[in-house]
Amino acid sequence: MKAFIILIIIMVLTIVVTAFITEKIPPARIGVKQVVLGTAKGIVAKDHYTGLVLGISGYHRWHLLPRQTHFLHFTESKGWRESRLARGIEDWQPAVTLRTKDGNTIDLDVTVTYKIKKDEAYLIIKDGLKDAYRERVRARVISTLREELAELTSEDLQITALRLSRAGDTLALLTQELAEYHVVPENLFIRKVKFPAQYETKLQEKQLLRQESQLESALTEQAKVEQVVKTQTRKIAAEALAEEKNWDRKIQEKRSDYQVQIAQINADALLYSRTTIAEGEAERDIAIARGNLALEKADALRDLLRNEALDSVGGRILLALTAVENLQIPEVTLNSDDPAVPMLLDLTKMTRLLVGDSIPIPGKN
Picture 1 (tube, rainbow, N blue to C red):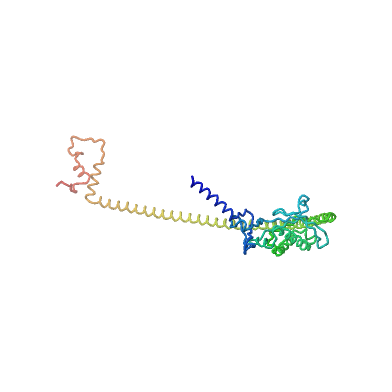
Picture 2 (cartoon, one colour; picture 1 turned 30 degrees about the vertical axis):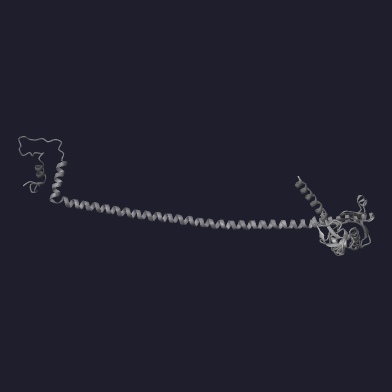
């Protein structure tokens, strides 16, 4: 229990000591440390940002400045004019009234945004401008706007490019002039330009005339363009027709060439076919004739050899035997009283009868 009490006491003392020797810088704030006691008293030349920093209560004093972008508004809005003082980073002021280069009095709604320079917040405190730097910045911005924007004419203010260019030049000049207050401008917006009522009426009439003139010019330009378009359309149509005819001619020429080539190919194919067929038929006829000739020669040789064979003794015997074998006697009348009638079934005797006795019979004496 005693240890627990000691631990709690240590924790409390730690918190108290930490709170005593540290300072918490809130988000979106810049902390500037001031030494108030001792020989080193004065502003510490360093900006401190969000977090815990070393700072002993009673020995150090802290000054907090906004880290965000400041907005300086000049407007003729009735609701915004109700507060003429700066509230934090917002500063609402009446519209900037100035006389243009051509002598017209105008009211401008302008917004200028700026920030405290990095690592220069301590210089604001050191220069004693903690509560006055906004007023100094506002006064310098009003003075510069009246000097620089007054160089524009009423016509220039109506031309966006010229108005933006002048605003850019003014912003660059403000960057130099506000450096002594340790701030840097970020943007300059000219939101509205209000001319006197009579001039507004004339301006509207002039703008109407300008718009009508521009409309007339646009219509004239449109008519010119339409004429050019019509001319180009006719020209393109003529060129397209000519090109179409040219391509038709080329296609017809190619078609004719191809037809001639096809006809030539067909003729060559027909000639080749007929020539090949004729040559084949001729070769066939020659082969047939040669075959027939060979057959006739073979037949002649066969007949010659057969005749030669039949003309010999054996041939005659073969012919006799063949004749006997092929002999057909459907009916024979024999005379039993004539012993000279031959025995038809005796082939040897029949052969002797047909070929004579002079031819020897094989196997017989």
